[in-house]
Image (cartoon, rainbow, N blue to C red):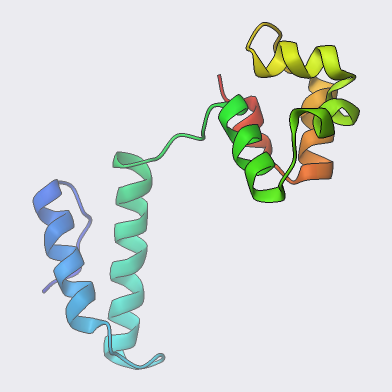
Length: 117
């Protein structure tokens, strides 16, 4: 198949089939180079047409809490006290820039997830 930009879902499906066909190709060979090009084209198309938005900030915090085994009480040091945790998690107060910075730095929650609205 000739390499060309992916402009439609049909082109996308054909490109995925081509990637599947070339998937066993060794790096630094003609087919390996073709595979790399097809992957780049598919990634660009999917980023534009099938982008997954970042999660809601509160859902991102809950997810990280679950991963780390944290409770709402554990968040007090990052959000400025138990009352603030209750307000933020109950969606009555927005995250401040300082709260987002601390959550990102200390809990490694992606900044784009915390900034999503």
